[in-house]
Length: 233
Image (cartoon, rainbow, N blue to C red; front, side):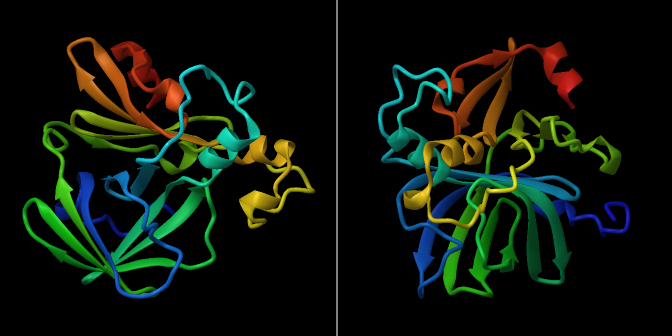
């Protein structure tokens, strides 16, 4: 399936930061809360990370098990996803294969492109988002895993120049799990499963890769060495 998917045009590839959001009607695909929002696009794969600015304090936390139920609920309520992208003319379709907070609406946008800016108009829902190309995200290779490299227990690593997003999928769901149950109705065991997926944005510098933003806050600031990062890819 992956090989049959047409490559995403080069104008889309790189790391993009959302700089504006205008909601024109009700919907699920975009969250009105102020947030840091990044979208990394490769030839076929995408990853999207949206961390609300009202994130509570996680200073004393270094793992999911150390989180309170309220902290787990916050993590589960973030938007972060990864999957395959299909472009048909001005239409962009994001097929979310891994989704921290699964939604019931398809993710489809009508796109206006320039050299370093994209304006996205919602097709299923009425909204307008503006995206700006992040410096350094086209300075080097854009890489993603091949079709046979995707395994349930293996990180998914997408790279665009000096930027990288690492997605850690959840383990297979127990039979009693329903991903669409409202977060407020989840018990602790369900919250721990839902939050087991993490999405982390890294930036490369002279010392390797440093985590800049993550759905798991305690990962931010951590480094992975150059050789370790290459091995993950």
